[in-house]
Length: 74
Image (cartoon, rainbow, N blue to C red; front, top):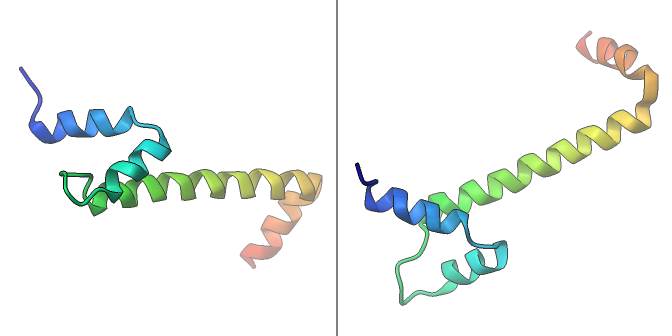
């Protein structure tokens, strides 16, 4: 069973580098990813950045993380 046209386009966009994806979005003359695809890419980057912040913060806090977490909940 073949996928829908939208599924095929989504597969193609996943294979693009970030630079290629941005170029694709910027061309008004050809069908390009809709706003949802752009928001999904931004959301994925935001999630990665949030993970980085958590890891860096946890490494700087050291073993006091549980005490700080408990104080934050109160």
